[in-house]
Length: 209
Ligand SMILES: C[S@@+](CC[C@H](N)C(=O)[O-])C[C@H]1O[C@@H](n2cnc3c(N)ncnc32)[C@H](O)[C@@H]1O
Image (cartoon, rainbow, N blue to C red; front, side, top):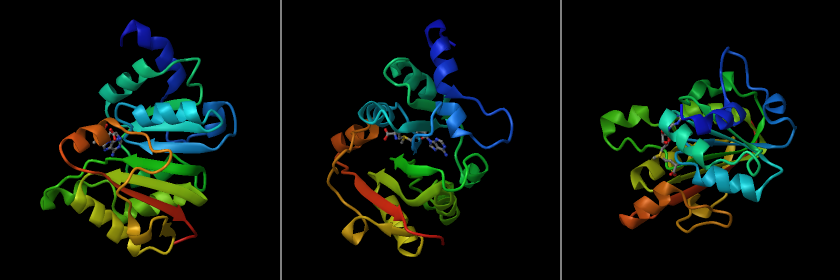
């Protein structure tokens, strides 16, 4: 670990050393609402949101150590006191780590699309994973998803159409234009430059499945 990141790592990174659930009050030192970003990548979204909303706690998760280090380099111990990072591969077992009804918002921006049919089983957004997200979101909590991959967008829209616990905030199930408060991520910019406009999805949890 680079010397310059050691203090930051101690402050910002959560370590999972047992099978306990995360205790957000202990982790953030307050009981402000918590927003989770899954697959934070280079952290543009998480870090800007944390600055814009100092009274909200932001937990950024990524499976890759390299991405965690990139975010640590960008984080400032004074400006980003409401951010924590966790390196973990997220799947439906996230419910073992995060208490039911404890998150106000979840963001998943440009999840890996696994375009080949035989790889679709690796996609993060599956029915059982949405069940898990439904469990950890508070009632009226929001899930925001963006993808530049049209077929994955349709896959996601279809999964949510069949659910009774979520309702789309967009007529027709998606939007193609940036919404208020949207922050461009590395993948937004990269994919737009290649000619792929993102699909934005936004769902409110309205009850139990
Ligand atoms: C395509 S990148 C998008 C990054 C960022 N959200 C953006 O829009 O630029 C996907 C990110 O999600 C992470 N990732 C993919 N699957 C994950 C999982 N199951 N759990 C945690 N992180 C994951 C990857 O390491 C990568 O950083």
